[in-house]
Image (cartoon, rainbow, N blue to C red; front, side, top):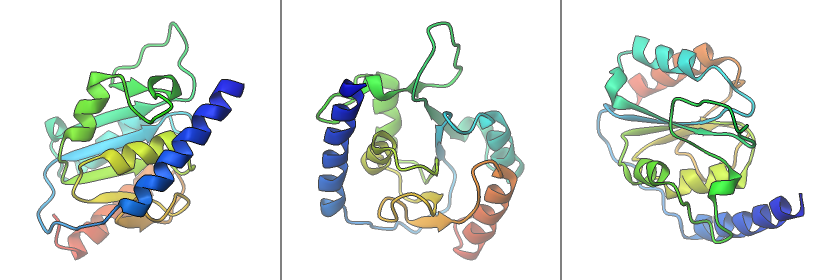
Length: 172
């Protein structure tokens, strides 16, 4: 308990420091690759969200999913690459190669599918080399380029709105 509080304190400090240095630069290009960062603590239908993206024209092999969970049970099986607070050091470094590869991939679109300000997730979003970042309005406004106001459980509405605006922005 105390360990988690201290780690969150240092992650918050790291996120705040990075946000002050962050310069949002938009790249005008069509979206072909999508990174999906999902907090499965509050949302468990990641497969449905991926199916919605596929139904809107994104190829399945161009979608990469990274799952975050607060607590991972010892016998729990997760198909996609995943991480938890245990994978972060106090300095904000990550010890899993799958996560490092996810962050180093220059996705055309990164969907931050979480609506709670968790400093571990905010740090992942900031560290990502994605060209265009989309998220919810309840999260810190400085980490995303585009913000949608929907509920996490309404992933169909989220994808409809997302692709409507991506079409307007000439990204698809």
